[in-house]
Amino acid sequence: MAQSSPTFCPRDPHIETNLRCGRCNELICPNCLVQTDVGSRCPDCTTVQTLPMFRASGGELGKAIVAAVVTAVVVSVAAGLVLGIFNLRFGGVVAVGGAGWLIGEVVYRASGYKQTRALQWVAGLATLLAFIIVTPFEPVGTFIGLIIGTYYAIQRVKPPRGL
Ligand SMILES: [Zn+2]
Ligand SMILES: [Zn+2]
Image (spheres, protein in one colour):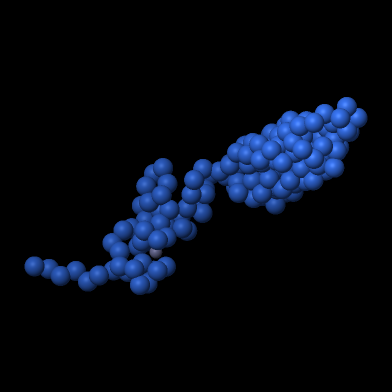
């Protein structure tokens, strides 16, 4: 009976494995493999194969940041003034929640319809900025608005699992 020598993962040398990347045929282990729609891949091939819509260049990211900050400031100052003038309690839920939704949409468009983790951070932090601006005008509802708004903002530019 032929005895095949054990093979080890090049990235995790202590782990014995006979799994291979479906693209470049390099050894991979459960620790470092990335499950994709077309099977298991090594981390290198995952990066190479990432579709353009799940990659944003520096310029696209920059546009998204500018658009997100402008949207956050304009929407939250306008909403804050309306809430303050009319003394709308709980209006912060709609103001910050709506700002988050809009920020997600704006980031998605400004980046050229990209969905990446970096864009999620941009959208999430811009929503936090909106929260900080609106809170002095209406401190009651903004926290719930922040939760709702952040959810909408980061969902809009969310990449698929594993990217
Ligand atoms: Zn590979
Ligand atoms: Zn490994």
